[in-house]
Length: 61
Image 1 (cartoon, rainbow, N blue to C red):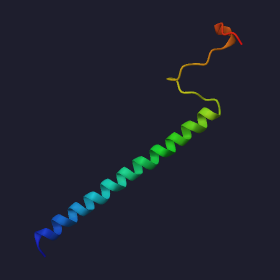
Image 2: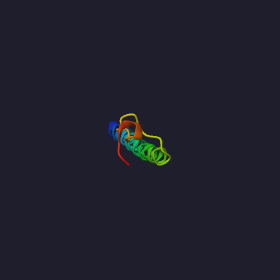
Image 3: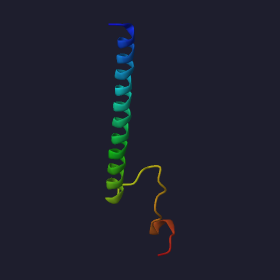
């Protein structure tokens, strides 16, 4: 066997690992977005979101 086999095999393994990591991050991001949507639908808001005005704040309803 030549060195070409080992070099190409290492590139292939590295590419597979990189694509697996990209896929994992992408799928995990989708799962976190779904969890955030479920939490916001249940009434839980993020701290960075602006709070909704309440009647105590002087909002007219």
